[in-house]
Amino acid sequence: MLTTPSRRAILARCRPTLAAGPDDGGMRPPPTRETPHMSRKLLHTLTLLPALLILAGLNTSRACANTLDEAVESVSESVRKYLAERGEDGIAIGPISGPKTGTGRLIETRLTDALKDKGIKILDEFDAKWELRGSFKVDPSGNFPFVGLNVMLFDSNGAELSAFRERFNQETAEARQAVNSTNTPTDAPAGSDAGQITTGVPITESTAVAVLAGATTDLQSAVQETTNDSVTAPVGDTQTPSLPDKAKARAARDAELKDAIANPTFHVVSPTAIAASDTSPFHVEILAAETPGNPFRRLNIEKDGEDRAFVPLTEGNQYGVHVINTAAFDVGVELLIDGINTLEFAEDSLNRETGKWVIAAGSSGFIKGWYVNPNHIDTFVVVPDQQGVAATLGRPQQIGTITATIYPAFEGDQAPAFEQLLAGGKKTRGGTGKGAAEGFQGALLKRNYGTQPLAIISVHYNNPVPPIDLPGDTLPE
Image (tube, rainbow, N blue to C red):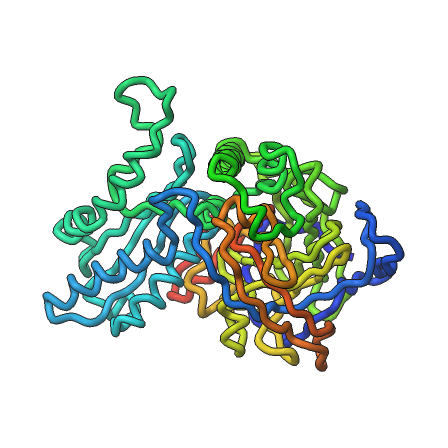
């Protein structure tokens, strides 16, 4: 049995395995599906595959839909030019602080990769002349929510280089103006700064905002209620939604996301399972083994002080994420740990680029590690220091987040109405999923995926304090 858990967790590398379902020491596997009707019960045994798919199409919900990658590119290019003018080619990456979600680690990792791609050496803070630090905040006060990312350079004495900050704000002024010109609510009082960004670079692409905010939200229901029709069935080219319908759907999506950020909540399916709402067909459970190799047990999901879902893990636990799809259609699941995709380390480049697991209609998938190839995953284990995979992801933050983002999956060229309403109906290209192999169970599937999420489910946890190696140092209280 699991010991009484403390609220501490971090990911680390362990012996690689991949299970087709939770080995929970006595829990029954899901029954085989015998009916096509959707049920709250699991309908048939799972199919869990990393999807080989190249995403296509952009979020065209607003003219200023800046992505996380675009924001990171702005930062990295500003840093590159500043260093080049001074004959330098190395820098340290400091913390990117933000909401209590742990997703600042995602921005740190993306910045590190972008700077390396530009030929910048990432140095240890003791060896670097300068260090890049940053912060981000989520603002849901306007017509649509956004993230504002600010960065600063510090010298070896800890003094900020104000010239860099001034230049960076000048270089990103146009992106801020695009947000500010469209984001003030019509009912805001005169002179209101609601929805306005004054410094840094904005991130407005809705999925990135939700992930960085650690939000849980049911976007499918919000859009469906607005359109008064099912949004998950495929539609033909002659049934392309009208511009007014698209505008209403996108407004509903933005309103739902704003509310999810401002007023966090989640639906309790059972003591161990949650969903984004009482009508959402996608559920998430967290299972843990007391130590690697022991049976997995479902953990009760609690509510933290800010009404967000919280799971208590304790040092030594091996854990996994059980995603349940009770819908009558297949989905692609993008599973993130502290904002890092669990297919980030896939040897196959298409798996890395797509970043989704296939969960077939009426089935579930149990993901308990970073996927490398069909014979090898690096399992999730709670340890007090960084090892293996976790060591490559940058410093852990105090609060971590497990995020499952659910996308529509479909066969052929006709995207469902949900995708056409929110992404302009652009077609995606499909690929074949990984097949059965030692350490990996599944079947060959070929699916296309939407670019717009049906639901996002976030579960938070506490990271342990990393050990301090300097003589005489002690762990903080």
